[in-house]
Length: 275
Picture 1 (cartoon, rainbow, N blue to C red):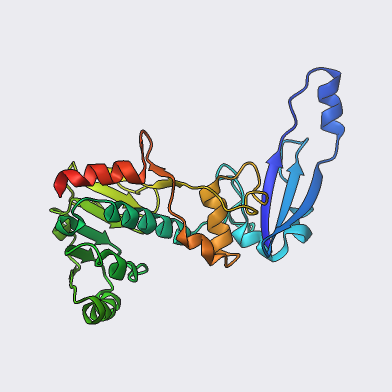
Picture 2: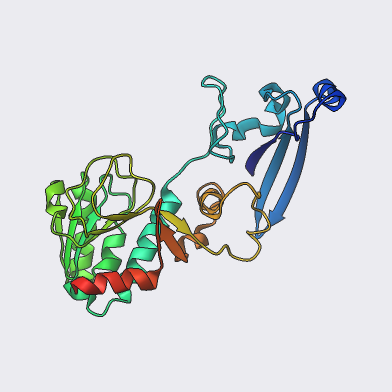
């Protein structure tokens, strides 16, 4: 079962009402919602004291405490055993799905110079699909062994090939860089390079970088989502913790960074400038 935790602080009162609130005991509410074979336990902690007493919810949260769905603003004590659920697996799928769709809609995708930045080789299967459309692909990874196995399959089935390297400088000439991971090192990119990645980069980066994805949740799942959680984060939990792998085929409606957004159509239009 997936468990979410929401902390609510009642509206601040004045005078006698403030004193009454101080005398109230914090309350815990539990609601279990089920849909499409998934159960979500939604725990709501109402704090009149202004503090969160974790011992009040320990028996309710149970073994879910180290992968608990909650707001990123909620911070747990370091040694409490409580951890906010976090995973980039689903975001990586959204990243590659949107990238592939944008490439498919380009006028001449075979002429695009594509870079894949995947240090741990976790998205190696994406190589097969991108090489169905593109002829100039460079993969930067520390796991050349995994990618070489995938490339052997691609060469046998499609007759296509790609460059596999550990040298990030080989991304410098790429017009479209797909990074299904969180970027943790400075990539030597052109200012006009388009970059789709699976989370906000931890270092400044050149290029037009997009890392946040917005999607339309399938019917049924939307009724399970706590209001304070966004769609990408909640679906990440359904995908990773709830084994709802059908969500891995979703193409985002749009992607964005801190200041702008792009649809598949606008991404393709931008890439067509380099085709």
